[in-house]
Amino acid sequence: MRTCNRTSVIGWLVLASGVLLLGSRGQSQTKEDPAVYAPVGSLASMHLVLHSQLKAVKDWVAEKDFVSAAQTGRGLSTLAQLYSYQFADEGWRTHCSALATASNKLVEAAGKKAAGDCEKASEECTRLIDDLAAKQPKEAGKVEHKGFKLPGNLRTWMTLLDGSYVDAKSAATAKELALRTEVIATQANALKHLRSSDTWSKHSLAVRDAALQVSEQARKNEFAEAKKSLKTIFQRCEACHENSK
Image (cartoon, rainbow, N blue to C red; front, side, top):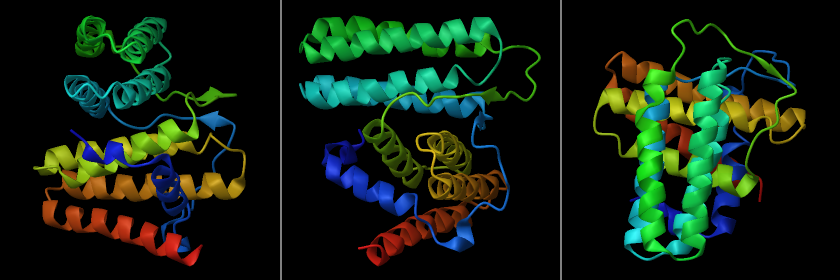
């Protein structure tokens, strides 16, 4: 379980200020249309983070911490909604919407502290996540969405991003680290749409590009170096936060 999920909301927002205010060395040099969402990330990284998020919900329910279970379930629903934009195929969108609906049922059950209903909703989420691969379009080219509106709120996204970083730190293999940092890149790439500020967008993209760089290192089996780079990203975030006080 991600024990960091017990951190206060203030903790998430502190992390947010650090992550999204990276120094200029990490900033994206690519000009991108802020009104257009172009997804990054692979089906493998999606599958991994969705299962991790669902497992965290189950663990909270087992501990009878239904508040944390509901919060984590909202993160699962938010991810399902985001991933519906991964492909233009209508069948894919419908399947992801079904996962978001099942996740919301899980949140509702957790809100009622109904462990049995949580288990039923979790089983449905597991089935839908496992079926994602079968729903991926055979021909999936580059997709761009104009007028994209990011699902979820700041609290949910900061919780997701922090959890993804903790998971990346805990990665046991180069392959897992590559996927975990790809998840961070996906989330940062989407997070730029939460606010219209150019500064917010620029620093969100800086996080994305840094995560993609670490992911590429890991894919080249440079596991030790990739782990060091991951730590450096966090250290830069902390240093930035200290400077912004």
